[in-house]
Length: 212
Image (cartoon, rainbow, N blue to C red; front, side, top):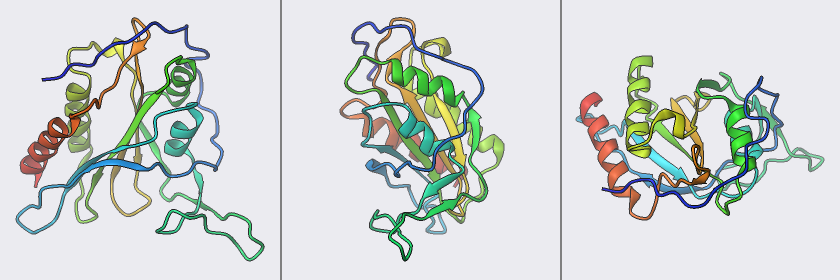
């Protein structure tokens, strides 16, 4: 069983906290890293999957902005920008708008920006099938179990995680973004080290069996 592994100290984060700022509609959808295929239920529906994105370097505006932006650039199925007749990128408004469930976007962004490490964050999504309709309690349960696994052995004061719900694609998606930092020491904290798939696959299977 793996535990999060710290690395080296970090400077004090800048501007951690405060009111959330409006986000710019420039964020490209993140690239998938590992998608844990959901176990089909008795109806043949795949209720839930857990996916980590390959992105993980750079400033916090990218991953945090993608989670909370009201308007985003439009991409086709090949992940290419959709442009108008004049060649200008088209933006679309998410409907319904993203909803922050846990965490503070400004704090998460500031912690990512303060990192001295090469890899500054981890992001991904827990996605439910369009046919599924998890209750607020079930969504909270999934987030709780995910955090217990991802941050095993850590106190909540030792990590930061932002949860944002997307519903604009006609299904529930619980997006997460966490700085790769153990906050008490500033050392690197990777919640998905090599071999992580087995642990998160098991979590997916348990949750699907419980609510499938």
